[in-house]
Length: 68
Image 1: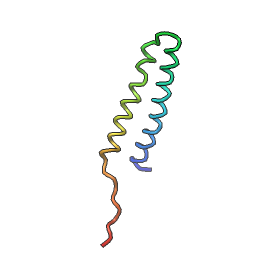
Image 2 (image 1 turned 90 degrees about the vertical axis):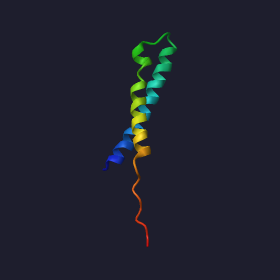
Image 3 (image 1 turned 120 degrees about the vertical axis):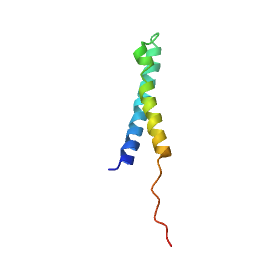
Image 4 (image 1 turned 90 degrees about the horizontal axis):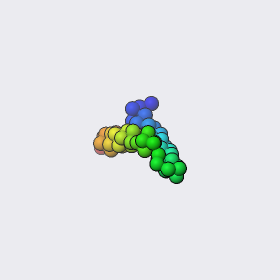
C-alpha cells in the first residue's frame, strides 16, 4: 500500500471520528453545559482532517503515460 492510500484512509476515518465527536457535543449540550473536554474534542480530528486534506490537495497526482 502506498502513502497516498494511507492518507486517504486516515482522512476517511478522521471524518467519522469528527462526526462522532460533534454528535457527542450536541448530546452533552442537551443535559446542560458540557465539560470542556467534550466541547474541545472535535478540534483535534478537525486539525488532522485539514492537514490530510491539504496534503491530498497539493500532492501531485501520478500522470498516465502519454501516447506518442
